[in-house]
Image 1 (cartoon, rainbow, N blue to C red):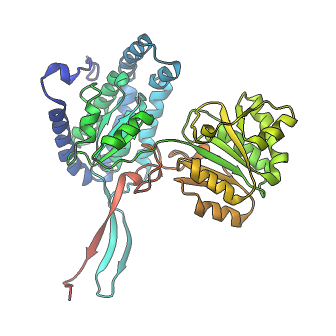
Image 2: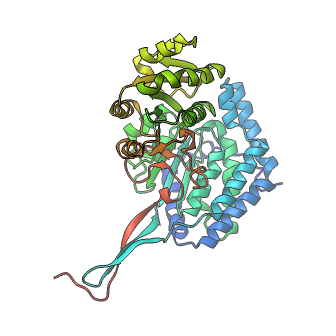
Amino acid sequence: MNAFSDTTQNVMTQTAVTLEELIRQTGSRARVAARTLARAGSEAKNQALVAIARGLRANAEVVFEANRRDVERAIARGLTPAFIDRLTIEAKTLEAMAQGCLDIARLADPVGEIVGMHTLPNGMQLGRMRVPLGVLGMIYESRPNVTVDAAALAIKSGNAVLLRGGSEAFESNAVLGRIVRSALEEAGLPADCVQTAPTADRDFVGAMITAKGLIDVIIPRGGKSLIARLEAQATIPMIHHLDGICTTYVDKDADLEIALKVTDNAKTQRYSPCNATENLLVHSAVAEAFLPRIGRIFADKHVQMRCDERARRILQEVGIETRAADPADWGTEYNAPIIAIAVVDTFDEAVDFITRYGSGHTDAIMTENLSTARRFLREVDSSSVMVNTSTRLADGFEYGLGAEIGISTGKLHARGPVGLEGLTNLKYIVLGNGQIRI
């Protein structure tokens, strides 16, 4: 029998252990493993990543069978086709997971990097060293590929990780977790560097987010209800994003050909991701020229346009169907073929709009005016701010980070796509030869 083919068992049905005791056990093992992983060399970590890729490919049928059972249960529960699509592991999904591990293995190891080293007047040398965060707690929706992506990023960045995926993907995640743990052992690293939640009990999330002293950082990937719950209840720092309300602003000095191509891509290349543009702002000086052209593109692609009064008038005059925007439309993440459109008279009005309605995720300006572009970069306070390019490019893979563990819209530590560097921090290091404070 294949080592990974045993049926996943829910620990909570096997023992009378409380959730608090369960998180104490898993968290304690993770802390011990994290110390070993933090001092591991790049070669051992890369060997583990290569072994994960090899294990995924060798055990593909086992993964597919576990995933098939998860999918069958999800269908029986009447979950949506979109949910089933996210849950399903196909051959191309598994190969992407394997390739992602190999890509991360090829990236530079951030751990131990020393930056800003300089000599102080007293002869002491001062710099900062990049170090792992420690133990990560990852809480995510029913996308089992996240199990491998998050594990690979955690391993390379020297962090232990406790993975709590969606209960609907429990069997898939357990099999993937066992493949990862086997690969760690093959590379001479502790298997407990990566642990999947040993129970499908939803209350395990509550135990994780209050496990102060065991877990150092919580990283949630999910809907508003999950984030709201964690913000209210967590006693551990979080790296998270809430909404992807992204805006593209077409300035009066925009190259309209570039603006057409980029705006179309930002909205219609794919509707569901968090970096798809939801609001389109157009300067009044170019609105009459630009809106009919982009409106026809949207109409041909069956994108519903929810417009302010001026944008609606311009589009209706050329026979393009729209609907009046409600106040709530400007702050809505549609994840659908819907876009809100407004005309503005000044750059400041556009920035004020983004500040009021945006979520701090990604915002873009279309302009050929260098001074205006620089102002936009300085004044728009989002995790990614772009000039003449699509918001859909705000992505760890597109930024050359390998896989990403998520996109952070917070103000502290990591912002934007969180890759290896975002899973580390800097500590001061001081080299002296007998200096004392006078």
